[in-house]
Length: 297
Image (cartoon, rainbow, N blue to C red):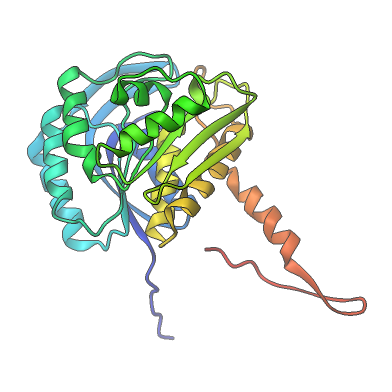
C-alpha cells in the first residue's frame, strides 16, 4: 500500500512559554491543533508560571530567537503567524526585521501589554517599540481595553469609545483592529469590535460568564484568528470563529490548578458537533434519511 501524505495549513506563534499550559506558546499550539492547523513556534521567553501567578521569567537571548525564526521560515510553509509576549525592545526589533522579509504572511499581533488586573507587563521603551516596529506589520491587532487605551492614549468607557480607539489604531498602520471589550466595559455581554481595512464595523457579542478560569483568553483568541487565516479564511470570518471559540472555551470551564485557571481549549468541538448533527440528516424521500459524515474545515 502506497501512502501519500496530504498538505495541511501551517501557522507560527512567536511568544513566551507558559509552563502552566494555560497561555503563551502552549495555548497557541493547543488552539492551532483544535482548528486543524499544524503549529510551529519560536520561544522568546520561558516562564515559571502556574494558575497562582508568575514566579520567574527568563528571556531567550536574541541571537537564539533569530536562529529559531530562520529555522522555521526556511522549512515550513507558514500560512499565518501571531506574536504574543515580546519581552523587550531588542527582541521586538529582531522579530520585526524577520517579519519584514515575509510580507505575504498575515500577522496577528496580540500586544500583551496590560494584565487583566491592570498591571503593566511591558516597560515604556518596549511599548514605544511595539507601536513603532510591530504594529505597522499587523494584519490584525487584538488589544484588550487597557492595552488599547495605552496605544491610543485615551480612556475607553463605552462602545463609541471602542470604535474611536480602533480608528486611531488603524491610523498607525494596522490593517484590521479587534478591541476586546470584555475586560472592563460594564455591559451585559462580552462585546468586542472589529474594524476592517475596508472600514466595515463588526460587533461581536457573547454571554458574559462569571468565572476565574480565563487565563490565556487573549492568547487563545488571537491564535484562533491566526489558525483561520492560515486556512485562507477572511479576517471577518476568522475573527467571528475566534469569538465563538473563546466563548465556548470560557463557558465550558475545566477545573485545573488552584488559582486563576485556564480555559477549555476543546470546548468548541461540542459546538461544531452540534452544528454538524443538525446538518447530518437530510430527507431525500418520504420517511427516508441518510447520514453524512462530518467534513471539517
